[in-house]
Image (tube, rainbow, N blue to C red; front, side, top):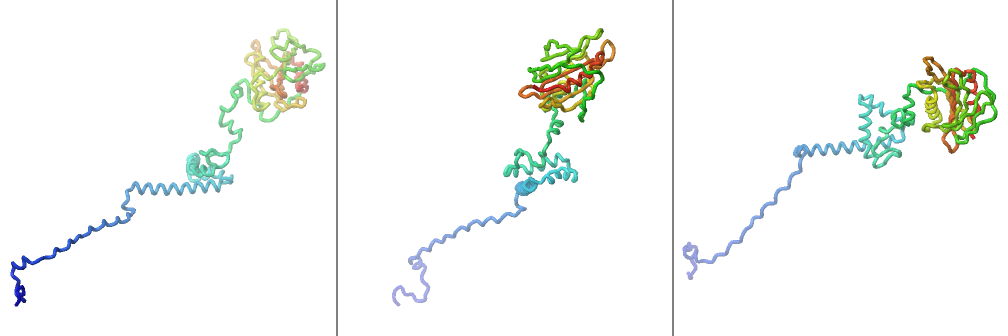
Length: 330
């Protein structure tokens, strides 16, 4: 047996200790990757997130419905008129219903605005209003002078229907030509008897009846440019002018209407008012017959022709008809 060949015998420990050994390879165990987060379920989300999602979805649905209402109903007056009635049927106040509809339709109106509406308005919340309704709903829009006259207890509102000036009693005086008031732009009859021309100030023309013994008030016929603020219509301007004539009647005088009608002053339009003036003199109730013609004068303020005759001179009342039928624009 050769040296180092021990056969199947056990190798002595001291020999095994001295034998060469091969170093073991280093084994590295890789760390496992963290498992992917499983998808969250609705029950795992915080409630505030759920509420936000629901609110956004509801908002989108409302906006879509509002846009559809605006696009479908923008040219359908029957649908627009029926909207307030629908809110009443379901028991909601119409103001609340209109407000909600306006809020819902506002974004859609911003994207495709309906002509004639404010971006903050909707067809349901902005119905058309007639000028008459606007004035009734907004008294501040009325001229202050007219608003004051409508509240004046001395002057009742004009008759709603036209009322023609009737023939007054008495015998009309003769006339001779016309008084041409170029300052006012009108011509009126000049009476030949009974009446006398007088200093016009503060008017543009003036004629007077003679004084009656024991009476401090006498008949007067004058013309001038309208001395009050001009209104939208000849009728309203004439109404204010008639109120102004109370300044030339005894204190405390009041009016009752006898006529209110459109008139022609030559080729120009006008408005005629007839009225009775009531007042008290020396404790006695008295009246005057009066009339006023307001004439539309080109390129000037309207002209006023005003005549008043007290009952102490009632034989001259028919002259009022002569004046009103003879007024002409120059």
